[in-house]
Length: 304
Image (cartoon, rainbow, N blue to C red; front, side, top):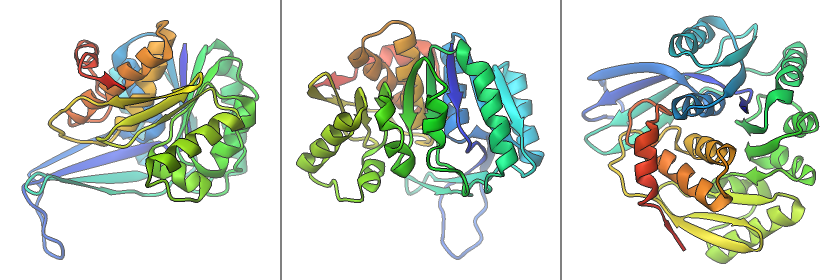
């Protein structure tokens, strides 16, 4: 079983405009609502790819009830920890005329000690069943930076981390199987500019030296860099007509996890993850993947 766990789910509003004029009244031609946020996006992607999986996250308020309702309607295996505070609401503005996506992000509410303790108890109960765990998402204010490390200490299976900053650095001594930041997040983790390829390569080597088995660094529509086993590989993603880029990094993580669980070697798992990210970009609602189309897109991923 693959377990997707994290503290920052979201209820997502998506508004589609023919054009957006700043400072004026803008009327959307379409509006959509769905579950999102890194941990839920990973769980949604795993559900649509198929196979045993479980999503663990805190939810609360009316927005949390909406998430619970959607997961139940889709038949997604989940365990939600009840929060006294409403799950955050994020808004995506899709400007079709300009081809721009704008994300309005509400930060998750500060974590309460009792809720963190309940999350830990739930994690300890479900993680023994997991052969692979995806830990993802930013930590709410008040959460110790060792949160993910503490979860990893309770984990026997392989761990994929989609985190950054102090919380990422705190985990590396425990040798996570795969660390998956994007280039900007990796730069912020080390508080330095990674604009040159040599700078990026050195940062990747440092993460490996600190303990990660694999490092996967995405760059949106650009090349993905991955390193493990002594070599750096560059992957060129498929060309797609982007509809909504939200959730692509989460589908990359979910795709890698799913392929590894199926027995794929890591380089093939990364190719599958990139195909999943490309398929996600071509769909409106995040993480609603089609397994057959993902497999077809794998052939379009080039590896250097």
